[in-house]
Amino acid sequence: MNFKIWPLSILLVCLQLGLWAQKPVGTYQVAATNGLNLRATAAADGAKLATVAYGESVELLTESSSRGMVVDGLAGAMARVSYEGKTGYMFDGYLVDVIMPIRDETAEHYVGRLRSTGREAIYEKHTVDYGNYFTDDEAIHIASMTWPSSFLIASKLFLMPLNIPYPPDKGVGTKTTTFPADVFGNSTGDLETVYDDKGNLKRIAYYFRGGAGGYSVTVEPSTQNGYAFKISRHDFAD
Image (cartoon, rainbow, N blue to C red):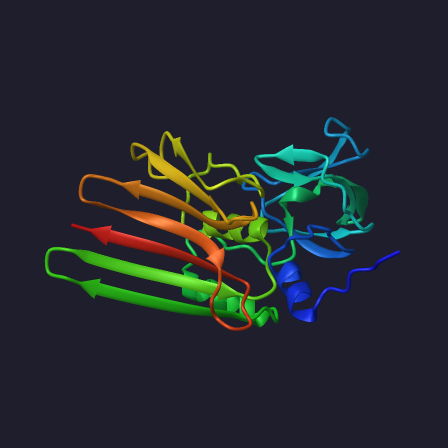
């Protein structure tokens, strides 16, 4: 029998980019905008014990590795959790091991809160005025993250439309999907999902353009040493 020994560098990349989506026992935050229901049984229609709001914490009591359910594009399972003295089951696709952005929070402030929890993160901002063309770029780099968590942070921090689901983890080439409106009610926007030559996610980007400008929100692996993902927003006016 042959056993393949993974080099440490490859192992760390796999863990940082979330190629293995197993969720170990620990504390997680709810990343669903409307909260998640805590249910008495491991069934999506089980009796509701409580509703846990966005940003609140639960304790995952048993290791969850199954990905048999898909909600809003997020793969997960009904995992056993504890919340305010109640024990039940909750869809873990919307559970993340990082604090989520709060309403109207700036990216810079969010990075400060991340650091206060021990999460490595950096913030950068670049503004350029070309006279008749203006650009504003903000980005955060976060260590030890996954694609789903990074996507959920991007959607809240940089105001992606609420109706955009998480794209498939596997695919071919570049896929573009048009959605009817952004969070401000503007016409249409496009979600572009790019895959590498092995079929793995390479970049997720949302693009919107209006009459006087537009913006884009991008999630991609960070090129900064020690950081897993870069989450950025690019605004322009002309």
